[in-house]
Structures are given as C-alpha cells and as structure tokens.
Image (cartoon, rainbow, N blue to C red; front, side, top):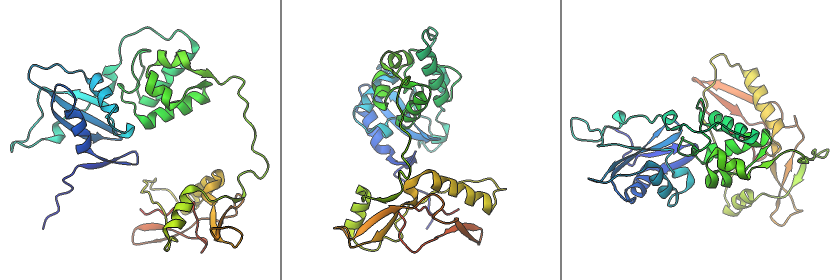
Length: 306
C-alpha cells in the first residue's frame, strides 16, 4: 500500500482547519461561476474561478458574497479569475500551475492621505499587508487581508493612537472609511495594575469547568506546537525565553489543585513571577522535550516536540 496523501484537501491556516471543498462549494454558488478551486498559499486562502460562457464576474463581488455565507477565516484572501484551469497531461487539475496572486497589483491609484489619521491608517495597512503602499480607497480584504490580519491592524492602530475595532475593519474596509469613524487614543486613561494583580487564587475559567465536567484523567491535557529555532540556540537561551513568557503572562503559570473549599472540589491559583521554577529539558534521539517541573496539573503548561 502506498500513501499518496489526503484526498479531501483539508488545510490548516492560522490555526483553523479548513475543508477546501466547503469553500469551493460556496464559490460555485455565486452567480456566473462555472468552476472553482481553492488552495492555501502561505497563510492565506486563494480562490481561482472560471466564469460561465459569456458571463463576466467581479472578484470583489464574489468575495463579498462568499463572506456572507462562510466564517471569516474561510473567506479567501484573493479571488483570481481564470479563462480555464490548468490541467496535467492526464487531464487532472495541476495545482502547481495555478498562478500566485499579486496583491500589489490590486492597489489603485487614488488621492494621497489628507488627514493625519488617514496617513497613520494607510501606513498600517501597508505594514500589515506587506505592501509598499495602499490607496485610501482600497479594500483591506481585496488587498489580501483576513480576520487575523484585521486584529493585527486594530492592535497597531491602537498603539498609534487610532481606535478602531475588528468589526469596523469588516464594515468600513478602506483607509478613508475607517478614518471617518475612528476614535482617538488621546486622553485615554490606562490604569496601572494593582500590586499583586493577576496573582493568587482565581475562579475556575469556563474551559477548566468544561474539562472537569468531562471527567477522566486530564493530567496530559495540553496543546503542542512545532517551532523552527536557530541552529545556534542553546538550552540556557531557550529556558530564559520560556521563563520570560511565563513571567509576562500570568495565566500561563496557573495551576489547578484539589480543595474542599469549592463546590467543584478544585481551585486555581497563579504563582508569582519566577515561582514556577526554571524550565528543564531532556534531549535524545535528535529531539528536545520539556520536562515537567511539578506533578500538579498545570493549566498553562506547554509541551513542545521538535
């Protein structure tokens, strides 16, 4: 038996597992579309459509139609209209021959930013999308943006003193549209965290209540991620990096322990910075694995394998 790979074309993009066939079906439901193919290029979904005979289709209109039918993470970042799909000598779809979209070509020639707010947003659009420049009337999503990138845009805009929300990005889409409704970060009061904030006993979170309700052994309940690291990385640097992450994010240090003081019989606590102990590792057979520091269940622990 020879394993040739998956035949359902399921891909994972930015943490979401996506059935490409579901996206292709949504594209075929659009008026004037005769054929559709969806593929993942890097961390973006790209759709290719062939119009029906005599039909003229607009890529932006198709994107809007599909966005109304699918979850935001399933909406293609680009829709490329082709005269026909490339085929192999055997008459099958040649996915490798599908042309890569050039998001830079979608930038329109328009007026320059007028206000300071437009200038900031235009610069951030280009920065997040990886383009040299954008027009003030260009759609964020037509240029390759998606739901994850919209959150990045909102975060960077806030840091620059321009207040918008992910919903604003989906509804207004352009630099000029967002500039009209954006708020200002000037004068926003940011309270300093109180001494001891985020440390100590905390209520059970919804995901922990769900986990306890499932029953059974959950000591190995964890998530993993495969990361590429520099070849020169040593154990001390890796340990210091992980320790910095643990010290920065309180909930990653959260621990679950049995108690008679709650109805569930469990409670959570967050130790102070540096109280989790130095991360330890064991190496062998070409792989490095983190070694647990405690026998108590840790909600924020991460196990990684290379």
